[in-house]
Length: 253
Image (cartoon, rainbow, N blue to C red; front, side, top):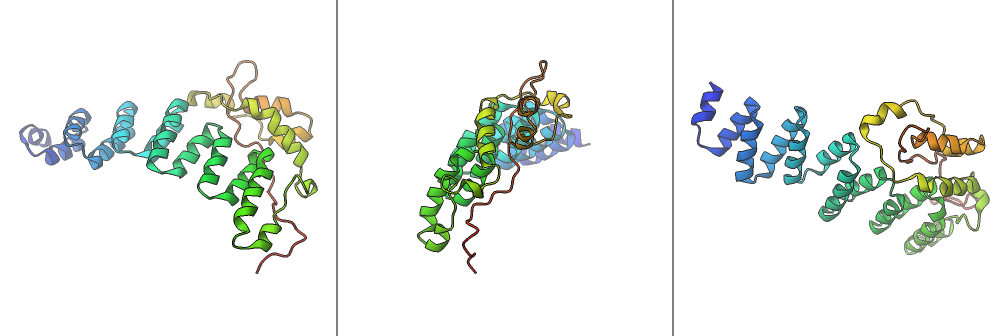
């Protein structure tokens, strides 16, 4: 009955609903193309995704500007080029949260840091620098101190700069050394189909591996380089909790 109704119906919205119910994605796509309706593209994209028609799902989500859907699709496929394009599209749409995730997955940590600064998320930028780019901490702390000084000079003064107080930052020299040694490992993206090759890799952090004298082995393993596997992106280089405040200064009430 529904198929018969689809054959005789003339109203585009009604025909679209019938085509969706019947799973006639190509017919629904024709109607969505004619209507250029964002809601129709979104509905069709979700159905295409759920039925495994990924190429159509991508096309639909592009028409609907479905950034979160595209992020899910590209990250699931391990599509680095798609994630890179999505970062640019998200930037145009002003969706910095999606931009950040794309850049982070691509291992473009410096760009992540710059995005946080441009978005006036300076404390977050400082914490990220401490975790992933310790060589940038002093630069970000200087920016943070200048920004904070306008509203709370005492709090700004309490921000510790590792160039001045390196002893306040646990494993500071180790972190700098690890950053230098793993920087070249970023930017290589294996396909999602290679997941099982990396599923049993070591869960040591790179700082722990450095302390054990086994950094090269663990860094290579985390990047999938065991002589037969492709390299993967390192995004979990450091796990120590960041402490950016001078402990000699009392906290503000």
